[in-house]
Image 1 (tube, chains in turn orange, blue):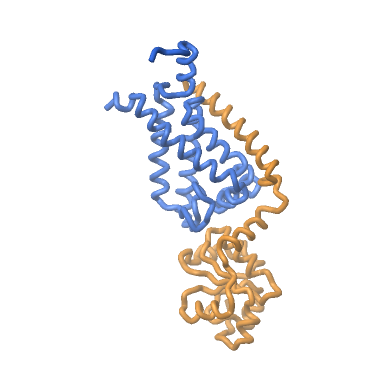
Image 2 (tube, chains in turn red, purple):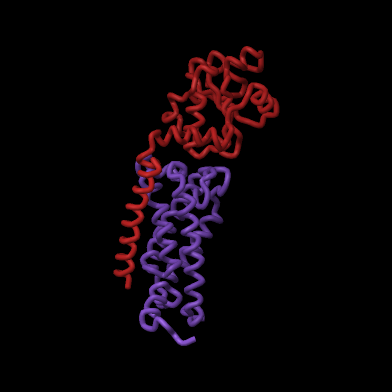
Length: 159
Length: 160
């Protein structure tokens, strides 16, 4: 009876494989999609969780201590000045900083920022953190320049 | 108690439960391959290519297995698939919980805000796994499409 069950199971898997590839070929999904999975993820992240916040929203989160700010810029820029209390997590060091990332609180709101509207590090870092299971993320897209120009609390320190 | 488990209606109830759940789970995922692939990648157990392959095939496996279990066509083979897939899903959820990943299971919806994994999901899957083992070992072919067709071929006009 078990041998027959295995034969039936193999038949179902073969049929499912044919149907799955045919369906994605017709609908231009999966391996037949025009954009990469990572691009699709960025699209989904922005569609499902409106994650980009304004200066006012970032300031409200800062004032209420409701979020942990994460600086995606290079360590050198972080040392020269960053949002007070922010931690440094340069996008380029993401793989190297895994031990520190694992210690980040998963239940806390994370606000990621980089230099400003001209950079995408904050979006990329948010995507990478999202990939690692952090779902409570906001991107302060106008970033450091906007914060600094508004004379909001900053500090200089080693990361 | 033994006769209750061997009763054709008990087998039918198990088939309806597992069959409908697998049809629902497969149908929800097959419409958005990318979203399901992303759900798989969130478990951090596979590469992008493997996640895409699984997202292409797995929803159809679930759907066809569910359909087979519900109609009784190849239902023991489909029960074997259901049992194996539940072992894999439960293992993936359990390891993600142990690694403290904050992700959704991607079971019946691809919305990350819904269906966060928890030990309850492990318990649900374990219960469902027991039902699939019961179906795999059941002897009853009553209320299956093949049994109806066989009866119809034997006697296409049964007396009222």
